[in-house]
Image (cartoon, rainbow, N blue to C red; front, side, top):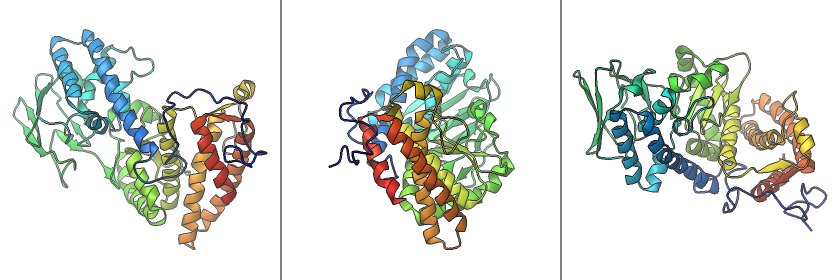
Length: 421
């Protein structure tokens, strides 16, 4: 007999325990979380809901922000509110699935909601409407404050928009399937709005195309994220260019050995930031920018490892918006922290959940790589080391974790997968 899919002696919780109340009890399962899965699973549904929530949050912020705006900016904000009202829910979810959408709709720590920076952040939300094929037939004159900190990043164009003189007005016109940029001092630009971004070889003095690697936008040149990225040591332009071939090769390798993982990555990962090389691989998935991966680009096999690792965190972060997954049985032990096989310092229980989840995916990547490429001996070494680490951390979770209902489903998958390593 099994309890919750686990042998009774291994069950990390007893039937007498009531799981912590979930924030969203309607989540039916954790499909697509443990390993990459085809589209349409629960992880994809929650991702769309998170994007829709950003649009709704912006709608709630706009009226209060207007009090800190001048008359021209208030009219502009009212037009943004109208655009929000006009778009259906599925369109809003697509529009606000872009890399900076979370940052633009959540006030940053230490930033008063509607001071200078806060107002600009709200106004910057216009970027998510510009050049998106779901958004049609509008004209907006962009406020000068949008350019007070430099060019405006446009996610659907993946380019920097310049308007350096406050005396020059810039109008955006979406009409007839085209996006028109019109500057009052003469220049203009028209782009076909077909959802495919800028054409190859595009060049314009006031719309600067940014790098794309393997279909993923690279955000190193976007000033809005500089404060968040600077502590990680971003690569400079030349290093980004020289890394592009390695990243593309890693994506191709992932598609060869694990096609489903590549497909899921392109659904959930929205952009990359390339970090400078320091003699060791490093990566991060900032919760402030859901779907963005910071990563070094050292060698092809390690890049694939990092992509599997961080895209696992991206999927986990989607679920964690709605469900805590698990908590420690003992608050005192949580305060002291748990021994982690991946860190020298003690970690909260959440760190062990993330570690088991991510490194199950890393192990599968290296096992597939070693199976497809006989000369990939480092993958065998990495696989053996991470298999031991996963088993050690999972043993700790079984003893000390109290999962939510959704977390229990995920733990059942962990329990099935760990013996197969």
